[in-house]
Amino acid sequence: MDRVSADAVFGLAEASLLIGVSPFTLRAWIAKGSGPPHLRIGRQIKFRHADVQAWLATRATSAMGGGA
Image (cartoon, rainbow, N blue to C red; front, side, top):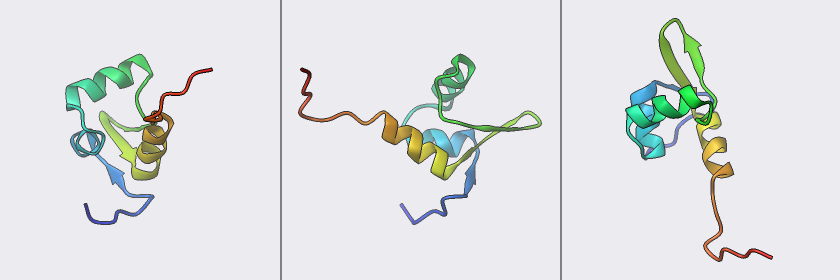
């Protein structure tokens, strides 16, 4: 993927591709309050690239597992 500015803004379809889920799933996560931070502009839902990347980073897990 080409480099994208951290302050770039995406629509629901583009953000769902970036995350790797369907737009329906992303919309359901937003409704539950568990999706990435988003902006509402009228009826449109928009996502900042930096917010989506940060949200994804918080969901990263270690391949080693490693509980205590």
